[in-house]
Image 1 (cartoon, rainbow, N blue to C red):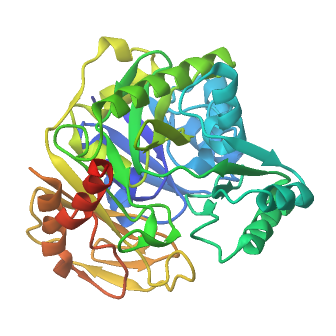
Image 2 (image 1 turned 180 degrees about the vertical axis):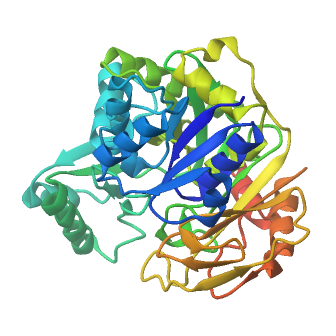
Length: 434
């Protein structure tokens, strides 16, 4: 579809989306925070603003007069940018700040689930004083997840049994959050395997993607601090080897209920909604719900999606999703992120050199939080390059990535165990044990 799209965002998922828009015949104008060389090479024009420059962004978009705007990063969706675009009658395929509250406030999300009886909720408490937190954590031996109420980029959630040496450290972290946010959310810890389900929606119809799994921990074997995501996997059948079909069915119904509940709560959600779920040995639980394309799982989904992405985004914005048919390739896929040394604690940015000569068609390199050119980039403190591969099996896709690592020169960190046979076997074993 030959339309003009303003794309707001400059990370790996936005690079993947920009490439699909270009493949679909769209013309791209981008608004970025960092000078992503891949997105820049795909764009007719590029502008540089932060999420605080809402009025400047709005005026720029008005001058460009696009057919469609897609706002991608959470930091921009939290602002009133989409609200102002809609007020100016500019077509946009992203949620308003009111609808995005499903992600920007974890407390709102939990309370919405409670008020509308959405299944999969976790026992939770909200505290606004150090004394209450201290008393709560001292009076029980159970383990908990301590969460800031707002956006954390996947790095703010900490578990009492794996991120702290004792209860005192956990209480201090909760107190830090209260001092910053005035409230802290403490949820009962649940155990199992996490999975992600993304859905494109116009506020009524939901088009579901294949199931993905994000590897959040920094280190091999799921060790170390949480990150924004070190990589992700999908399988060719749309499920994952360790998932029960009933878990997928329940996850879809939960996302449908979220979209309906948001509408009843006064917020029409249009865009991409995705839930992070935990399959326990008996049921599934909602870990969190987000109001935008996932990263890294969104990279998998965009590359597996068949058809015209511009048409899909227009159908979302025009509330015409029920009239369209889209599908995904029956391929397994893996994403592995290259990050700076010390990422997750004290990152040490450096330079990477990239060789894309004769890159196989089923292997792609996406550019994240970097600047420079396509052959040499300067890393920032965040994720730098996402290497994507697809194959008949997850482990074959993982091996394809490993076979092409010679193309990246420089000092970096990566999780090599993502999507390996050994990693998958361990996940399957957890649910087969009595």
